Amino acid sequence: MSLSRFNKYRNSKNAVRLTVIFAFGLTLQFPSVRAAGITPGANPEQSSKPHRLVVLTDIEADPDDTQSLVRLLLYSNEIDIRGLIATTSIHKRSSVHPDSIRNVIHAYDAVHENLLKHDASYPTAESLLAKVKQGLPEYGMKGVGDGKDSQGSDWIIQVLEEEDQRPLWVSVWGGANTLAQALHKIRNTKTESEAQRLITRLRVYTISDQDDSGIWMRRNFPDLFYIVSPGGYENSTWSAINQHVEGINNETISNRWLAQNIQQDHGPLGAVYPDVAWGMEGDTPSFLLLIPNGLNVPERPDWGGWGGRHEKTIPEHASFNSGFTGGVPIEPEPRAIWTNANDTYVPYVFNEYGRAVRRDDNSFTNNKVTLWRWRDDFQNDFAARMDWCTQSYKQANHPPHPCLEHPDNIAVKSGETFGLGARCTTDPDGDSMSFFWFQYSEAGTCKVPFRFSAENTIGVAVTAPKVEQTETTHIILRVTDKGSPALSRYKRVIVTINP
Image 1: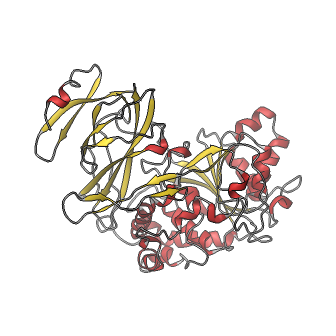
Image 2: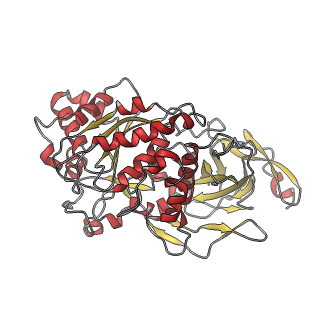
Image 3: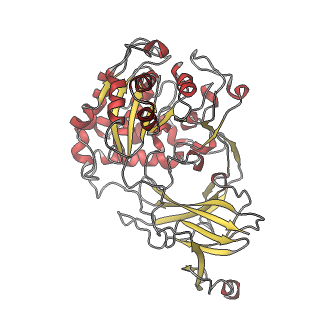
């Protein structure tokens, strides 16, 4: 590659200079990008504080709630768990089981001392037990109205009223009527301005509609931030967490993998992880998007991440008015919600010789792709944290720390070749690392492919396409260590292309 190709960019005003070392040893320094007023390093959309979370769970309706709770507690160092509320659902109409939540926390307590060796931020079991509450043992809208307050619904209001500017995420694993009752009380007991202030703090991610209160909330609170796949479960985005996909390796959701990496020889917390009955961890996607991995931006579900990708729209009733719902009526949506979106995804796979990775022969397009494309990464992350329950820091693996040498929000010219690099990236265990850059076109407006010099190098030359109007695209850096299990973290670069 000749120097002349890059010389014309060398003297651009306010450019960020980047050194790129190509395979044949030529070192090029060129003004790669013009910063858009963003400090190099952290994504401005990533909060420095952990996200606040309240969970509503119909635990004991299906073993998968217990599975998801085991995983969630392993992320309690990075997610601020503010409530764990036992509720009903269409599958468990007349009883709630807070004791089952406590049982898992007791197992967490048995490994807490070892978890502290890996991160001193893990909360005590006592502090988590204080946040276990329960909703009414009534189904759906029968548990909503005057006189229907519960320990759980009052707790949601109490947490909402805390002097904390962070949004409150409510992760709904079963029925949502405890949240609906909190909203009912807020509307009837607060001034209009105060009610609006509290409601705008809420962020809801429900695993389908497992009672009839979800559609009621979306109809009566039009400003409520709401992520849901309405209708039949099999059409939902969240179901991709346990979907066997033809044409890819599904090992990390196999029962054998779960037995070896989660359930057995990983201490009391792994031992309480039950076998799969109807599906593995169907509730987990509702909090995966809160894990600070460099990819997730919870306030932007349309940008995609471990919890899938969603677009704000009014879904066509006919598109989801089918499939298994447990008997919950399917009604037309009254307004736009965050719901299923499609990705087109071509996996890159290990290459035995030559370039270490190659494009697979298979291409996939649907809403489930938005979630399972990250599945091996978040399953390996889960397995590593389960190792933290019993292993010393030196024995276990920990995720790498990607670091960009330039801003993560940049502007380039139509057709321009620019550079991206991550030479400041580190790994806490001193592991070797692999780098992979790719365009996530669905997260931006530009659908025309960018050209990369070589996707799997620490620094890459990228050519923007020709555009007639200003467009945006997202380029993702995935850094994966070579520890066991291999762990991945990301950086998101938002590129504005000007004509």
